[in-house]
Length: 639
Image (cartoon, rainbow, N blue to C red; front, top):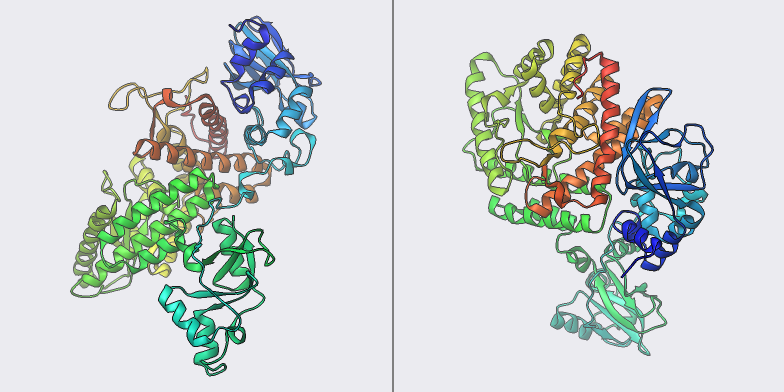
């Protein structure tokens, strides 16, 4: 039975990140050096501007408040398993905050000199710390601290953005079809046909010396350059380009692009001096994942029915799961998945338009709104869309409107067939309220902007995140220019929009506990969308509108643009960009795990690390909401 103090310390630490990634021996060695401290309520652990201790701290029992006494501001409360006081040791700076026991507390003081070599040798620990920086760093990839982790170059820990996009090994054919340099061309052509292959390897002394593809035969034999009675040596591409057999899909694609070839010869060590083990074609690469985005995109464009598209949407979801399992950066994931979904929607509209008895009477645009308009709809959630069509004479408006409302009904029905749920609030092009001419849309948005009540603010907040999925972008540009001009004329609208962004319920109580739903179907669940995601999205929208930026809809990209426009607030905006991506990824993973929208989270199913990462975004949200309050002089709605 374990009874030594160090073993009990190790038993505690092993359940909390980043110590979960240490070996048993590493944990025991570290635990042996730990000092156990008792702090009474209001006991001081360290003070602002104090030289950092040799230790950083983990809360074993109780809670520690991190405050800025000068600003009279509570920054954070650390509870069981939380780390604090590490960043000053890493960054070689004095403490930036006061650490005071919020109640009677027992702390583990861990010597940094013992922890540092473990963290340097363990990339999982390093990645956790560069993401969190062990409390109080709202932006994990802050320019200020990038490259200074542990006081060494950040090449020790590679941020996720620098990882290869595909780690999956590519499958290749081991059934080699070969010939010699002296094989007659008519003979090898028959061999390729009989074996249903598009290439043949030329072998000499069991080593590859060349390769012949269908393209070579077309270009050199059918053109008359080489007679059909010629030999393989006269046609083959030589020397043959060889690669190792453990290529990833991405490496194979890059190799083919680099050399402008369609086949790769794989050898035991990647050189032409060892025997061939397989041949890899461009087709093999494209289908290797089964759900390759390029393959899916081509399949979408070839679809002749919504039934086919529904099957492809399953492929898109499988691709999403694969990307998340490989920990591909969420920005790249969202771009790929959004492009595929946009393509699916566009194909649905194309099929519906082609099925109509008569073509559209005037030019029009289909607008995807909400999360799809922002490029953030990774899961199969409901559809938000609208139709904008060219102005027509008043006498033709009723008939033209009827045509496009019918088109909206047909398209939304087919979108539902392929997996896009109907919007419960009917904010869809099938609703006459979301199908207008350019003039009508200008009148509608004018009313929202000049009479910004709660309903108008809600409607405009959804509408302003639109993306042109199909049709005339010029029409949409005209509407966008009009909207931004009206916003400029009515600055009070931004205040109301900011007010709406501040009315979402708080994500946590004073003691950092998650505030959950108190009744209804989702009682005791945490509403990730309403309490954290939407406030972050709403804040980005009103801030980007205030800068008259028209072309950026994605929340993370909006914050990054704001960081450029307001250098004095860049750290906060970059933190918001990171937080919005982290929240999107978190929701997507939860939704895939539970086969739902990922909105409502069962907290008892989250581990400590997941809770830490989720809570980390709360501080960023609070700060961006405080900025909105001050900038737009909005009455506080923050509970």
